[in-house]
Image (cartoon, rainbow over all chains, first blue to last red; front, side, top):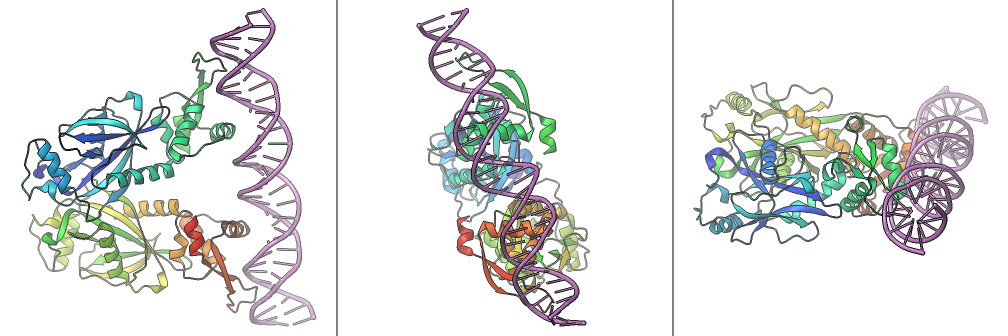
Length: 238
Length: 238
DNA sequence: TATTTATTGTATCAATCCGTTACAATAATA
DNA sequence: TATTATTGTAACGGATTGATACAATAAATA
């Protein structure tokens, strides 16, 4: 039931900052472990015969059910005082196990941080066998996270801000088709900064990476906005 | 003589892309191991009670003698087929050791990549106890490197290009005081792209991060250029 | 059916940025 | 003093971006 040392490489793990966009806010998936009061990023160990990237992908897939995700490595955290022994003991205790003090998961761990951008509405978060809940939290209202996970979230956001514009970030947080207003909201939420509607629209259109589709009639008493999607071919060329 | 398992964490190591600028070209420090034909990036293992960052810093210090260096983590390499066992065996054999097949350094390793930008002229490269030489190579004329080290170099350059402009990169590759022409050459070399002299100068000056000093009289029969240094206070504010 | 309201798409004008050219200001030499 | 190679900056024009204005709706309302 506990992860076996013989199947994994030691001293190294991964943690994932999984983000979704509700249309208004950025949300992040946080695990809560049974009877332990420990909140954590979804993470895991790397199997001996598995690429690091594949381990992370497996972890995200198991918890979200998604196959196609935008996954980016952003930083590796290697401070010697990253104390995972204490929370791991509590987590094990919450499950009714007692870990011997020389158990491999109580050793020092360096963790590789990845961020995943997913479509909020397509996901049914699924707890793994060690955690009793996995939930969306508003990125600005996180519970106290174990070890240095708050710092990991911070660093992830920094990287996403940096990658926005370079990598197809909107593509993964939005549904296939979206309005210009929704796209703008993604940019504004991630960068925590407002844009002028007309300038934003002109800039996006001039980048020539969007395909325009039919209009979206919401029933509101005003002009209906066009729906757009990212033109994959043109995005590639960027 | 060999690194001891008891003193280090396992399955994880670091490699460093150490770059210097001659005034004309980018150079990189490459190790050659004794009697093995193996060329490698300067790397190492992490001591059990040492921050990852400190381990890297120690490695760079031991090989360059420099205390103050610009060190940035850029990527962690975790493919399962990063085969370090073969080159490590050869390296050990070159030193006259035989490693038992269960020796910890022959296990799978994930490596964290860092780049270091240093002042080429201040450095006396020093071989470590396992390598018999450490030398500057032109970034475009590298020998065949072991495992995936060529890929690591590529990724480092990519990151540096990305960081140029955001982080004080010129600051570390150039001496304290430098001419506008030298600064331009750094940008051109890293980005592999030429800039127009007047535009570059205007842009740099308008960024308001340079302090102007006395002129540099080289003896050449033409107007002497000003020397500049980075204004640390103003760089901070950026 | 005409009017009203909220919103969207785009044109327009001005300010700013950036590429380019031009030219004055040297530092040493002839 | 004239010459030569560079450097520092101004000046012009085109391109980009910010700000404002306004026409074009989609549905509700009169």
